[in-house]
Length: 295
Image 1 (tube, rainbow, N blue to C red):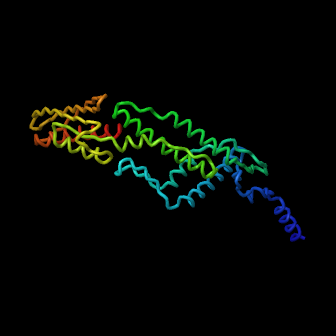
Image 2 (image 1 turned 45 degrees about the vertical axis):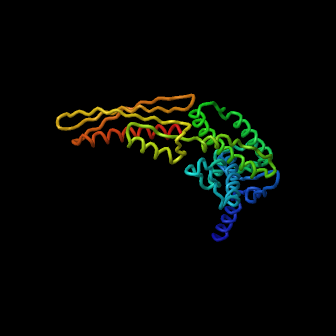
Image 3 (image 1 turned 90 degrees about the vertical axis):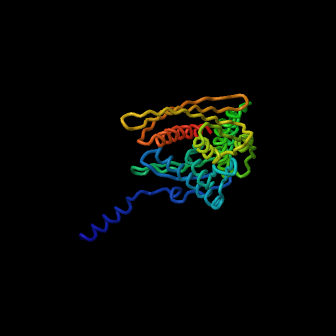
């Protein structure tokens, strides 16, 4: 008798398990019109977001298979700024992408959980990305007669273009038949063709800044941008130590524009020459940081 009661309770317990929807367990396959995703959560929003994350994960798998061995090289001047692993960049784009006008195909609450089936229109989302790209391209900065301003703007514009290209690749995955976009090449050309040279009253400072700039740009005897760096030192002895105060005047100059920056540095040592070298190096580091920030 006890055995029969136990068996009845066991059967009752098994039959009380939640009846999870079949469309959740077997999510519909994607087709040329829609991407499908299913998800669960303890409220509607959590279930919907889970389903959208499921769709995003499928897109990432698609990207991995499409761009597995391909790498993207954004080569400004044949030296640095190499962007590795195209697929990783596009995956990051997906993480920051909000699906447009998704549809809740089905949603059901079972016990304390919600189950959702979401579908997104491939064409609609691809077209939305294309429109956003076109709007962003319209807002890229205009060029001027100043090599300094053009280079600064070109660096910013090129970073934007790289992101837009990644979004375009996402649109192509959503809809392979989407229209082509001609991304501007003038900014990359400016970055590649901008030349520099450094003029200084300090050999160390000149070579230090030349080494910094040459990692990204071409050094020329007829530069488009001149970097004029003159440093002035005052050293005095205080209680057996030598204190050097340095003032660096950094001038960036092209045919139409010039920008001036000033730095002050100090160093001390029991050796007067070492005190000077340390002070110059400190100012050189500040100038290097500024140049890397600007260009």
